[in-house]
Amino acid sequence: MPISTIGSDGLASSAVTRPKIGYSGAVLQVVNATYSTDTTNGTTTYADTGLTATITPTSATSKILVLVNQSGINIDTINSGTSVQLLRTSTSLVVFASFYGFQTAGVVMGASACYLDSPATTSATTYKTQFKRGAGSGTAYVQNNSSTSTITLMEIAA
Image (cartoon, rainbow, N blue to C red):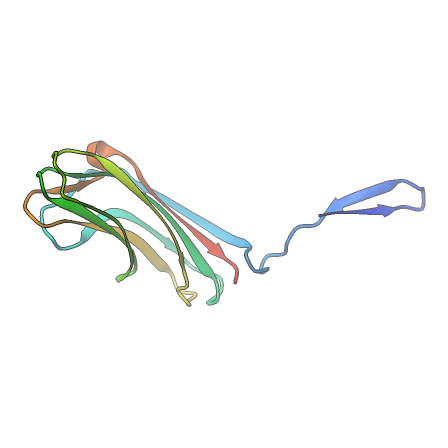
C-alpha cells in the first residue's frame, strides 16, 4: 500500500510498503525440481517415480505448499490401472491420481496435486511421488516418452 508524505518543499513523495518476512502467508522460499526419465512399475506396490524435491523450513510453524504435475501416466494393459501418491519422506500424504478400468491400453495422461502440509520441523524435508499398477496385469508408466514432471515446494509463514 503506498504511503504519501508532504515534504517541507511542498512536494508529495510516496513509498511502497511490503509485508515483512515472517508475516502470516508470506512466501519464505521456493524449491522446484523436474524429472523426465521414463519410469516403469509392473507391480501393485508403490515405487518412486524419480520426481523429488527437498526443502529446509526456516521455522517449525511454517506450512509447505506442494504443487505437483505428474506427467506421462500410462498402463499397457486393458482393464488395469495406475495410481499415484504424494509423500513427505516415507509418509503418504494423498493419493492424487487413480486411473482404473482402461478399455484401451496406451492412453497417456497427467495428474496434478496442490497440497498444504504442516511438517513441524526445521530439518531438511523431502517430498516425492510414487506410483503403482492397479489390479490386473501389465506395466504402469510415468514420464512416458520422456515427458517432464514437476514439483514445486513453497514455504509459507504461519
